[in-house]
Image 1: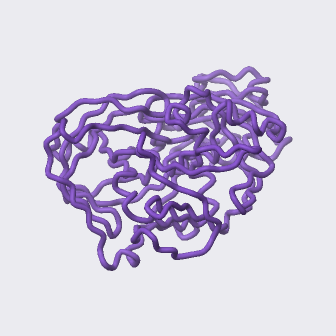
Image 2: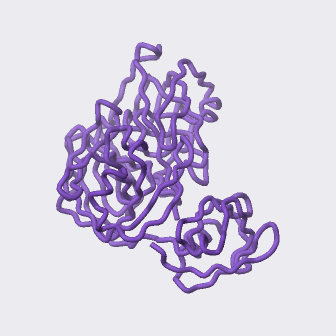
Image 3: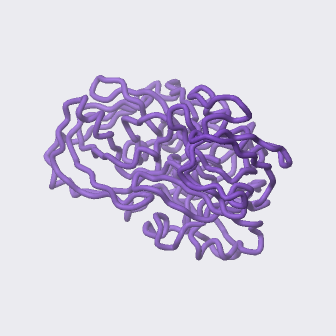
Length: 388
């Protein structure tokens, strides 16, 4: 199972921070300036870019209203926090500070001046590697963002351009939170949805919004996710299909969060995350009021369901149990959070084997028995089965 990495929305009156006025420019050849990216194990769009003349490890995240630097990277740049504030994040509220910035580059776009946030949130939200820069809606929304997941590249182009044809949904940047907001039909009701490229899940709905689909959701279990505000536990299930305008999506993993969760606090019924977007070629253009989706090579990929019920994270040469999913083989066998695994079927755990270990045996073929060696001594057999 993948962890979610979704972030925050923040705001600050410009009068509270003295910084050079922001100037944003898009290069004449911006359409040729594709940015290669890596899609991480947590479904983050990771790439390298320049901040104040220094290379930064960045995440492309429309779920961030205001772009932000990690506290450690800000220190390396010599940037001092000038104004303190707070941000509403998935997982809870976090502290932040604001500072001025000289120059940020993203593809063919350059912004000089303006403010940027400095944050120090839960490191588990960013997966296996730290992140220096979260590129948010404030840097992206003036232009159209095209994401080619099949080729693992993106670019910023002038708003209004239509570089490919697909199914069109509405898209706007909200006045209230500054986030990207679309609308989908659930049952007979149109529901506002945050479009969040920093969220590794497919679709998240509030409890109220999910009730419109109750009859179609299969057996449910539990899962844990991490935002910068900490851990969030909720239910998950799989929809056999979901309709977005004229587009029918097959097998969609659905996460259900409390009405008081992040989406509800932002006035939305849920979020469309990168787990769903990655099945398509995507154009996000709030200036033109549209999101365009065209099926990609992964459009019919099935959901990677856990058959073990263990959600794990690497801790050196160990796998640590983060969550035991309800009704799973691991729950039936009495596994507990915090248990550490040092070998799988006799193969020692290592950083190089982590991705394969998590994406392989934890969602392996039902009926397979896996032998797990515990770091505290002893072995346990776990027989995999489908449970949701």
